[in-house]
Amino acid sequence: MKGLILSGGAGTRLRPITHTSAKQLVPVANKPILFYGIEDMVEAGITEIGIITGETGAEIRAAVGDGSRWGAEVTYIPQEQPLGLAHCVLIAREFLGDDDFVMYLGDNLLRQGITEFVERFESDRRASFSPTLVGPASAPSAQILLARVPDPQRFGVAELGPDGEVVRLVEKPVEPPSDLALVGVYLFDPSIHEAVAAIAPSPRGELEITDAIQWLIDHGHRVRHEVLEGWWKDTGKLQPLLEGNRLILETLDLDLRGRVDDRSLIDGRVVIEEGAEIVNSTVRGPAIIGERTRVVDSYIGPFTSVYFDCEIVGSEIEHSVVLEQSRIVGIARIADSLIGKQVEVRRSETRPRATRLMVGDHSVVDLA
Image (cartoon, rainbow, N blue to C red; front, side, top):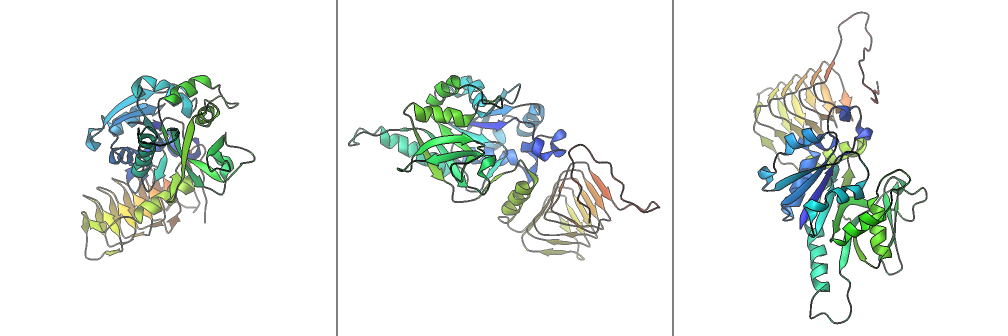
């Protein structure tokens, strides 16, 4: 089985961060989101991985490399325009060949991983082809993962028939037939290639994977499904990204590899990475402080991730994600925030006192 990870897309819902960076490389608990998907693939025994890239392809390639650090072999597949998930399958045809494969959206976080999901698909297919099986059986051509959500109109949505089988899929419906949203992990056999070649673009000009799966259903193929029991986050927006950061931080253990002076307090599950320095400060977990970051005369509260080469001085911050090489000085309170890379937030001493901003397009500023 091969893996296909989708890492194109413009990331418009996370602007301005994604004006200069791939959304799949925004760190959650100080690890790029994309890396969690690669790790899930490898843990499931999938080491041949294709990565679909768009405008941020060079950045993705620089971060992932050849995949050898995970024991994987990565092939990059450029997508000139974001023309839909099914289009990704179409352009990956040569890489995928006639193998079964997992397709994983690179900005999704799935706490339980995909190993059991893959094993059950393979087991069902083996059982269906078993020569000892009595009676007819249909091997699944696809397997989808569903989650109950309060806002299904934002997602692809599945409708189940009286027998519990998937009978219909609708992309971002105005009137959803159920609250079962498609999670960004799919398994397919080679019949999906016939499906993606047969469908037409949707009204929004994209080849929808929901249409391709519907084609399979309409042509007599079985589509297996499971309802997710653990949590799943589509990190394309700020709030789910912060929630994913919180949930992963809750799994960390105390790990102090950096330097903590005797005037500082480390409370709870805190990771201080190599070369980081905590001076006269409190870090209350779960939290993670990245390599070579300095925290001086400050308070770092729960559910905060500060990436590498940052400086936090005389400030308080909690339930936030701070990207690399940023500096926060003299700020009384920051919460529920995503701060980009090489950002400086400081308390001005210039008179007259005022809030002075240099804010990029699509930014959000919420002042006390």
